[in-house]
Image 1 (cartoon, helix red, strand yellow):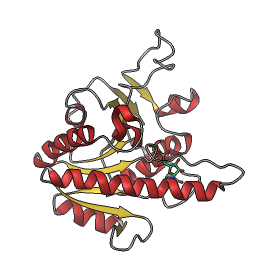
Image 2: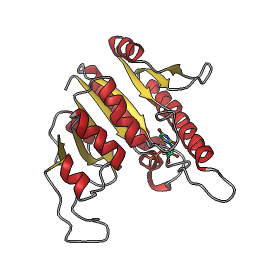
Image 3: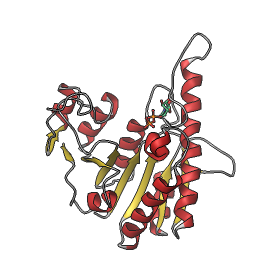
Image 4: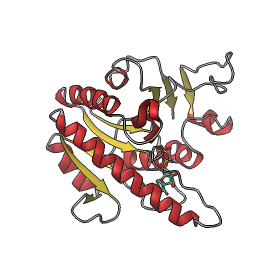
Length: 231
Ligand code: UDP
């Protein structure tokens, strides 16, 4: 792989605590990405915000405002993870689709390419910048924009199943599944908006379990037993 887009859910960063950050988990991610970068792989990263906030409306909180909080949570996550990446010896840049003062750079394809040319890891924070979207959609959008070869979707589960393996012990794991089937069967991979963007732009994904040993390295080398989402 020459260039990949790695998606980490916010909850994956929280480890057992399910909220905030788990430094050991993030350091392990950083060490694996460092191996890839040293081997010449260009890595973009999108991180969710679920460890702090999920967009939700209520009588008091308007959906648009709730989603803005969610997008800012992803900025906090990227600042944190970027610092851990730097602590293990990587160079990083954080991009957002809106101005965040001195904290991040405005995203553009050219700036992202310049960042990769300097052997830096590019973090794509702040989601799409719009409410009613998700970091799944951000992941697919940025992967298409930066012309990544594939999306590496690191999850708590080790692939795509025909039903929830947590509640159904007979759930069957797919070795590969076409994006059309993901859409038709409403399989839990990425949300519908993101799935359609994937399909229309032929962006493949590899879904795998983050908690498996060296999972990110093995996923980038195609050596992990996850699920390939074909397009
Ligand atoms: N969000 C948004 N627009 C975007 C991306 C994210 O409004 O383009 C908000 C939305 O409220 C979402 C939250 O940010 O619930 C966190 O993102 P997500 O739920 O995708 O994070 P994850 O579940 O992957 O941790």
